[in-house]
Structures are given as structure tokens and as C-alpha cells.
Image 1 (cartoon, rainbow, N blue to C red):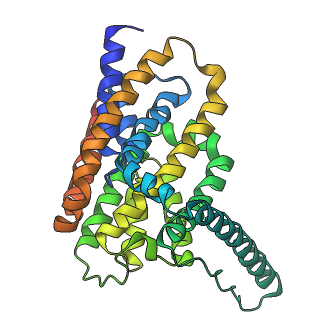
Image 2 (cartoon, one colour):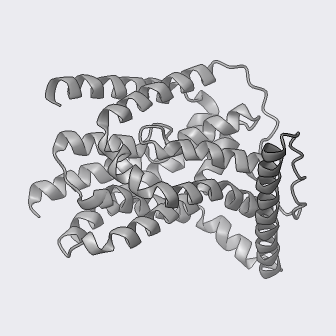
Length: 312
């Protein structure tokens, strides 16, 4: 480890915090920047572990709401309701999967089950909805982890192409005359939460953007801009924490004492910048939409392709 490596870790941490909650793909930006800086991370562990800084930024900003919920009379009972709702959602999801397979084998119409009734309490509904949206990424992430890290993370051209395609989608979306039906992240039906979770799986391809995929899916299904961004924030907590934990378990043997100062610098930089971004992002999106981020993606993707052509 030398001073230059620490400076590079600082820059990448700032980039992570700046882009994690914007629909521009933080992973894509970090991988491209690391490629051109010549930054080498064992097993690409650094790029995943510094996301913990961004997770803690979300938790710190919503700490007041979380604490207020826990202090409510009957909070324990509500947590039990949320757990029961999560189990009921799992059973519903398993039933739907079984019905889909059975209908395919027998070549008949699919008759999906009605989602379970969940408590009318907004906090409980949000917890169950986030849990359900998290499941697809959890399953696919565990099954495809090695392929994602060893193949997709090592393909800069693919990252640039996905940045450009995502930019086109955001510009197209911002020009649609959408009529939102849902204005609160806790109002979303369970079936919609599951679909948003499926959209999130597109972000397994670096350059797609986790927040971008979930926000685009939400907007197309009738969620307003602010609620779509807020649900994406909440969904980020279990998703990024799961990715962090899985990567740490799988690569703990690759880490050495010299890696921790580098990770710590990136982590702190990501935390500070993520707090600043999240504080201002919801208001900006409500007023201006997503076209700025669409152009951002197009420019970065195009510049990345040019740089790869010239320098490789």
C-alpha cells in the first residue's frame, strides 16, 4: 500500500457515494474509473465493501423514522405482523411459482393466487413490500455471484454500452406523460413490489444501475417520482447489505491487513458523499425528473468507449 493507492481509494469512495443513489450505476462508474486508474482490488472486493458506507448513510438519514417506529406503542406487535406478512408473502410466492410450472407442463392458463392481506399499518406494509422486492435479487445474486464478479465485472465495454442504453431509457421515460396512481412508498401492492424486485435484478449487469432499474420499473407501473426514489432507497438497505455480506463471506480469505486502510478510506468517503446526495436527491427529482441523469449516462458511456478504443 502506498499514498497513491490511498488517493485512488479516496476518489473511488467519493464516486461511490456520489453515484450510489443516482440512476447512473455506481458500480459501473467505479469499475470504469478503477480500470483507467489502474486500481487493482483483490477479487473486486473493495468495490462491493465500500457500499457499506452508502448503506449507513441511508440508515443515518432515516434513523429518526426508524427510532420513532420502534418507540411506538405496540411496536413489537407490528414487527411480529411484518414477520407474519413476510412469511405469508413467501408462501404466496411459492404457490405462484408452483402454479406457473404446473400450467406450463399441462399447457393450460396460469391462475395466479391473490396476494395475502397485509396490515393496514404503513410501516408494516413497507417492511413486507421491501422484503418481497429484495427476494429476487437475493436468489439470483447467490446463484450467479461468481459469474457476475469474474465475467461481467471484468468487461468495461459492456459497462459503457449499458450506461448508454440506460441513458436512452431515462430520456425516453422523462418524456412520457405518466399518470401516477401511488404517491407513497408504503401504498404499493405486494405484487408490484415483487415486480420492482425483478426490475432490480437487471442491475446484476454493471452499468445498468440498481436505483435506475427500480425507479424505471416503479414509474412504468404508476408510482410517482418521489415515492419511486424513496422505495428504491429502502430497498437498497437489504440489497446492498446482502451483497456486502455475501462478498465478505466468499472473499474473506483474500483479504489481508493491508486492505483494511484502503477499504476504510473508501468507506468513509462513500458515507459522507452519500449523505449529502440523499439529502438533496428527492427534492431535485420531484422538481426536475431524470433527464439530467440520462444525459450523464450517455456522456460517460460514450467517453468510456472512446477511452477504451484509444487506451484499451
